[in-house]
Length: 69
Image (cartoon, rainbow, N blue to C red; front, side):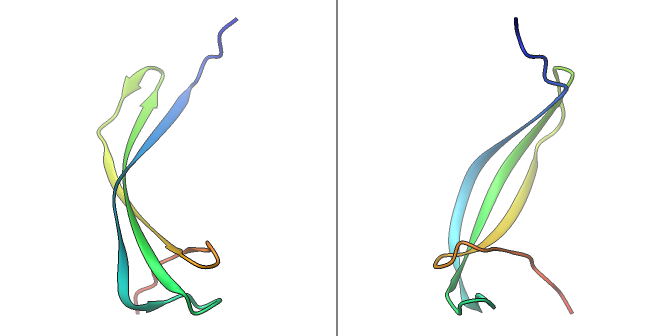
């Protein structure tokens, strides 16, 4: 018996780089920027890909959000 997926999202890591001058608000460690290429599949129909950027701390592994003022 197969499992039927209604929505499937696949992510592929494109690049990662350290951010100079940025530090984690929790521990003060360096921040890493990760770029992902995401593909969304709904009912076996693929949709165009998107590039997403995620930020995380290298020391405490906290996922960070970008806030603009």
